[in-house]
Length: 306
Image (cartoon, rainbow, N blue to C red; front, side, top):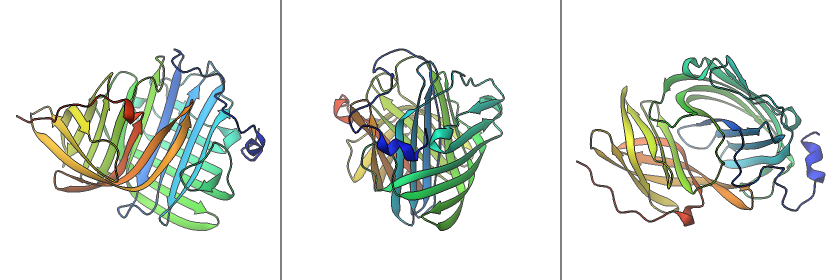
């Protein structure tokens, strides 16, 4: 089944055979980079369910200030499981035009390579399926830092990416700080609301998760690393404040300004992605601040530092 053929699939809800709330092995790999002006960049995520024969692909490209999207949940999946100790993690979805591979085990990652040829739609909203604009991404990510304060089964890295883009025949070359993560689990995906931050600059990175089930994160600045003990974002808005409590008792405060937004169908709801510019602790970062069911988050009291 080619990506182009997906356009002919039914327009009604189709969830493959991944059942909300069901325990099953799942694995995902994600790569992100945006330039300092937040006019060009990529957000690519592949999620595999080997026991369910289902692959989800999310491909979003920011090109000259315009967003192009390809998402699909009706893709086949091999029965092979990618585990972090293996020398390679293969997240290719050839029927969707993606070759996406981790080289090296997660604790000694060498690089992540991506080639994507996807027929994308203009804009960040709409159903799964093909669009009219051909988009090609060629990327190599090499890590410089593996984050420590993460839950079991999840690996997070910041590093550097080299990316070639082609959008409707127009070309661009990107390079600079980037972020990647891989996660494996058997517990249900998207079972609880959360807000997830991933932001970076040449000298700093901030990764944090706020959810009912778990809060974690990592703040690295000028080579110094601190665990994020708590993360409190304001509700979604164009200008969105947030705070984070570090392991040394210091309280970080930041403001994320939305540059572009998109939605991805997940089961019978939508996951909301926000590409942002960030002022954090007096530093300028770029990245994403993403939400799943933020309306279901329990309001919390403001954080207080030591």
